[in-house]
Structure formats: structure tokens, C-alpha cells
Image 1: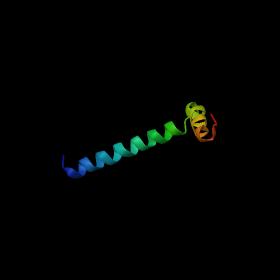
Image 2 (image 1 turned 90 degrees about the vertical axis):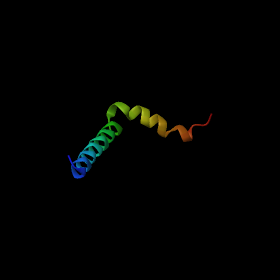
Image 3 (image 1 turned 30 degrees about the vertical axis):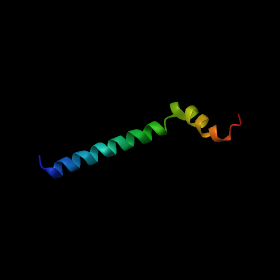
Image 4 (image 1 turned 45 degrees about the vertical axis):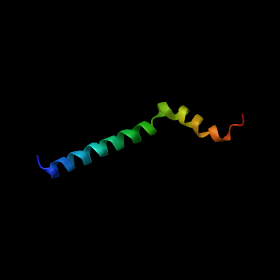
Length: 45
């Protein structure tokens, strides 16, 4: 395994992590939490 194989593996893993984060961020399960967090600056305590 040379350095180019290692670079390719790191690129693929990084892309998969990116896709996982995007899927998590757009998940309907998290929508209510994100909507609540988006309103925090506007709340007047």
C-alpha cells in the first residue's frame, strides 16, 4: 500500500462522513430540534 492508496482511502472515508452529516442534518427526526435551536436568538427571557 503506497501513499496514493492511503490518499484515496482517506478521500472516500471523508466523503462518506460528509454524506452522513448531510443525511443527519436533513433528517426529519431532527427537524423539531433544529427549529427550536433556530428560534433561540429571538426568545426574550
